[in-house]
Amino acid sequence: MSCTGQSARQPVGLSRPRGAAISGRAGTALLGLGLVMVPWIVYLHTDLPAAVHAEHWDWAWTGLDAIEALGLITSGLLLRRGDTRVSLTATVVATLLTVDAWFDTMTAAPGADLALALVMAVCVEIPLAVTCAVLAWRCFPARTAG
Image 1 (cartoon, rainbow, N blue to C red):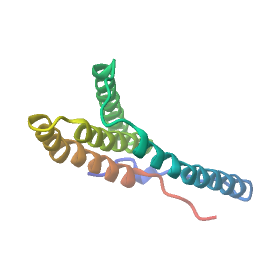
Image 2: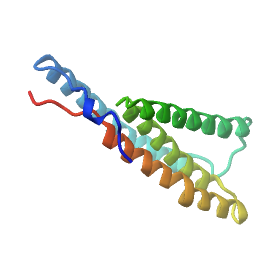
Image 3: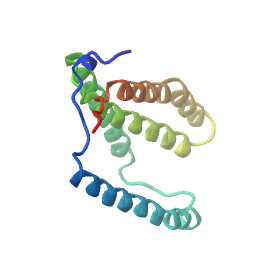
């Protein structure tokens, strides 16, 4: 697997010094928000019910798979054109496939449903997610020094 547009890499990054101030503030904000989520995660884990009924369960899963398909199609088209923006779409697809595998296995009923979810996760979703992540890494535009 390679990114056909690698030879025509575009420089990325924020210019200095204004870019450094923006990324410093944004980085601090993201770090703070991530830390604020820790007690929320503990709360959710201890207070959410073990089982719930979801009204639009079929639409939730259909929608997720449709977004994954759109991401794969978009990534394929961008890769064929040698467009380095494939690094963005491939990152999104890798993330969605990982989330899909997680929720499939965590919400599956014991028995055949769980076995199918595990097979799909191990044989399809996780390998495809890793492939997309590697593609995103290889096609990410080069950074210029300075």
